[in-house]
Every structure is written in structure tokens, then in C-alpha cells.
Length: 215
Length: 215
DNA sequence: GGTTTATCGATAAATTAATATCGATAAACC
DNA sequence: GGTTTATCGATATTAATTTATCGATAAACC
Image (cartoon, rainbow over all chains, first blue to last red; front, side, top):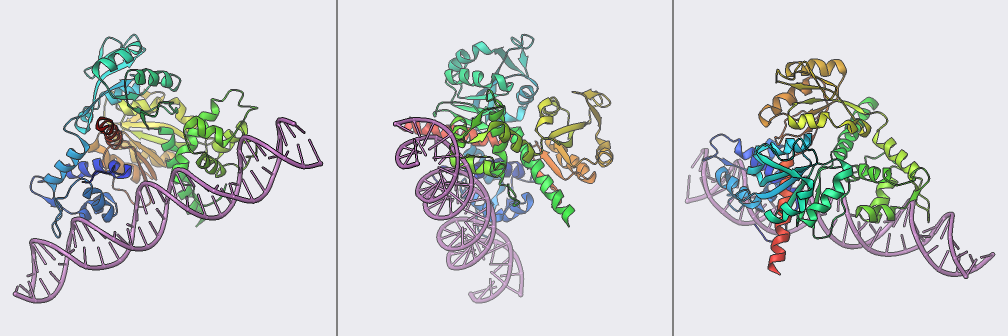
């Protein structure tokens, strides 16, 4: 549990460990080893141990970790006790899907409002969250002191919506559009580019199938 | 354009380059340099040049690449001319969102059918794609020779749906559930774990804000 | 035609991430 | 009580990825 920033890859794995730990029966009393977690999740055991050492120091030789404590330590580290408020721009199919994920709130993200251009949805609620006109983005973000925005608009509208969020004081953007966003250095962007994922998965699949054919 | 497998990170960036190139005006006649692409997308120019060298050899000193040729070379490399057929399991909000992305077909992915447990949607169509009972997964995948499956079911149903896909001959799974999937070595899994992304984005955001406060 | 310049492609260095090794520890066993 | 064993934590090694450097090339300029 040191001070220098944790690696991105470790950070991505922590919620995976957490979800696994939460499914262990008798998790209030059970213990688990890095070896056991690694076997269950198909990871290298040293990697698991190193990841866990970044958030917990409750591991004991021959025993492992108390599941209860480990869950607590990871949740503490990830800040799950105090979720980040966020707004979502673009209440289309994907936007609605994200708005309806009730479990985000328990994973550090609390979507408090949505914005859209569609008159049909503006003024109403989706999964309990109010939907406003996109012209209100800057104003509402500023008023609610929102620091995180989720972009699920069509590509053509992405930069404009992004700019409005930034003007409203948003400092981190979760970008589901396949578009590159131009932002000041002070703003973080995490791209969730589905098209990139397709490229990886279908290329790797085809490599495999080719290899097999060659045999 | 060599034979040893391309790096995953390069593969993820290729669609980003492609999307940028397609938005260049007069792209039929224009040329572009790696330097230019790097500046536009906020990347290192050597990285861009190296990435491009994996798919194209049409770069010329002092000039750069013909945009038209580069687009062609990337699309060729990613196999966009011949999209992979896939099925989707779980036609909830997220599933519907993916089914409605018409542009996937132009990015190497052709979703041909969906499966769900909900009687309301089974037998009908979503975005033109037929929806079948989940009991049909194995049978239909086998018959259509499907090799890629997309999992957008609730976590509890993930492993079972995955098993059915594997029994049906599926060799690559795009997993949108936050659950670890157990699959044979012959099956590829790409996890699109949104909870992992939240962890990265909110941690990095908080690190920044803390730093600023400390000043 | 010679010089300057922007760019490529290749190679080298640096950084980051994953994996292997090994001593220390503490429970379980004999 | 001593020995064996599973595990941790630390350090070392290896692999992957990014970034820097540099010579070669060809267009543009004088």
C-alpha cells in the first residue's frame, strides 16, 4: 500500500479479484491464497500476489489472506465507499444500458443525470435519472460540481459534447465513441473503443484458425 | 507487413488511425505523414510510423503516405472486406445497443443472430436480426458455423451461456460481463470489463485532484 | 545542380509489465 | 520439538511496449 501510483494493469485486475472474492462461500470466515486466486482466474500467481500487495498487507505465509479483509482492502483502495458522481451524454441504446446498470453505484460510479437531444426523452427520467437538454451540460455540471462525464453520443456529436463537459468543469471522460477527443492536458480521457476490440479479437481468432489449417 | 503476429497495442490503434484517415477531406488525393497523424491523435510519431509499417509499405520520405492507399492497406490488414459472423447472447439493453450498431459490419463484425430467455423478444427480430431461445445456441452456432460469440447476459448466466457457445463450436468470445469465464485453451476470450475501466478512470482522476490540492 | 528540409525506416535505449527465483515464516505433521 | 509444506514478500529476470536516435531518401528551394 505505497504512495507511488499503481499500475494501470493492476488497477484493471483489482475489480476482477473483488468479484471473485465476493463469490466465495463463507467469505466472512474463509481464507484464500494468491495461488488459489491465480488458479481460479487463470493468472500468474506472482502477479496476483504483487497486485494484492499494493492494496493489502494482511497476507500471511502458509495461510494466505482473510477473504473478508481482502475484500475490504480492495474496496477501500478503489474508493467504493464513496462513488464518483458522473453525468452521461447520449441516451441512446448504449446510454440507456449504462444508465440502467444499478451495480455501477457499488463500483465507484454514480450516474446522476443524462443529456440528450431527443425531445421524446428530455424532461423525463431513465432508470430514475433525469434527462436534460444538451444545452444544459455546462450549467448543470458546474452546479453539481461533476468531474466525470460519460460519452455515448454518435461520433459526429462527440467533440462538441466533450467540449461542453470540459467547459462545465469535467476532468475525466469515459469515451464510448470511436472518435479521438481533443481535450486540454488537465482532462483525462479513457477510450472504450469497441472497434479496437473487434480488431484484436477477430485478428487473433483468424491467426489461430490459420495456424490450425497449416498443420 | 511481416508474418510474426502483430502486437495487441498496435492492433488496437489501427482502427483509430483508420477512423482519422477517413475524416480527412479530399482523402482520395491527399497524403499524410506519420508526424501529422501523431500530432492529430496525440501519439508519438515513431509509434505511428512503426504501427503503419506493420500494415503498409507505401510510405515515402518527405511525402508520407497516400491517404487512399493507407486506408486500403489498414482495411485489408484488419479483414474489413470479409467480416466475421457472430452471435450475441443476452438481448437486454446492452445487447440491443450492440445489435443496433450498423457500423460493426464495416469494421469486421457481422452479428447474424441473438439469443435471449425473454419470451417477449424470442421469435422476433431486433435491428433486423432474429432472436432465438438460448436452448438453441449450440444447434444454431453449429449449423451456421459461427466462430465468434458476444456475451451480454447478466453475470449469473455468463458461464452457462459461454459453455453453450463453446459446445456450438465458437472459438472466440467477447465478454461484456464482469465475470471470469472458464474456457478450454482452444477458445479466446476478450473481456470488456466496464468495472475495470471505472477503476482506472476514477483512480487516476482522484490522483490528479489530490495532487492539485497538495500544491 | 547543390543545399536544405521533411519524412521514412531501422536500430537502440528506456520504460513498463509479466514471470521466475528464493529466503523467510508459520501452520501442520510426525 | 524438529521437519515438512504452503505461502508470502522481495528481488531478479525476461518480455512487451514506447520513445529516442540516426542515416537514407526525395521533394522543394536557391
